[in-house]
Amino acid sequence: MTGWHMAGSHPSQYEHAFADETTYEGKPVVELRSVVPRTDGFGTLMQTFSAEQFSGQRVRFSGALKSESVEDRVGLWMRVDGPSRQMLAFDNMAGRPVGGTTDWENHEVVLDVSDEAVAIALGVLLVGGGEAWMSDLDVEIVGPEVETTDAGMIAALPERPQNLDFSEPLTAAGDER
Figure 1 (cartoon, one colour):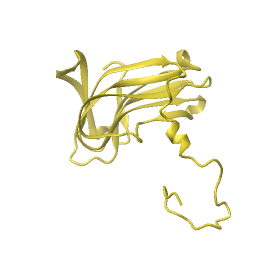
Figure 2 (cartoon, helix red, strand yellow):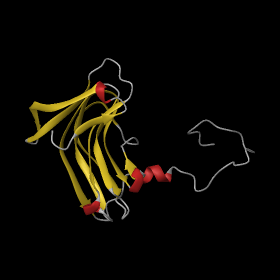
Figure 3 (cartoon, one colour):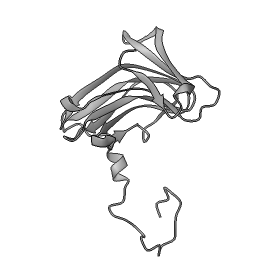
């Protein structure tokens, strides 16, 4: 498939192919599936391109997903990279995962592309075993009235460092005490 390639933590545990006998609203469908009995990570069908024409804009990556027996999750993802490949913005739908068996549903990831951005990477990831189908993918510039989807990642961070002198008890990661 022109422009697309497999990647991820364990890409050899996954494969992709056109779903020849399946369409979504008359459009081609690609399947992403695990090919081993027990996966050790995730696979993603992805591509990376220049951020130049999206610089200073809000960008939406959207598409329809369908899943079958997804053990962990499947989702769209997008990352905006700056010089030296540092990540400037990222969302992989971890906070709104698609798992199990689902029918076709539209999803989106919306990020701001800063003026210093040099590349955008995006794709569909499958974590764990199962099968997922994708279709009707699109990348478009949207206005400020469309909220970014990475806001939850930033909102979850404390406003400033905490307990630097260790005077309060240590808690487990994610514990809200």
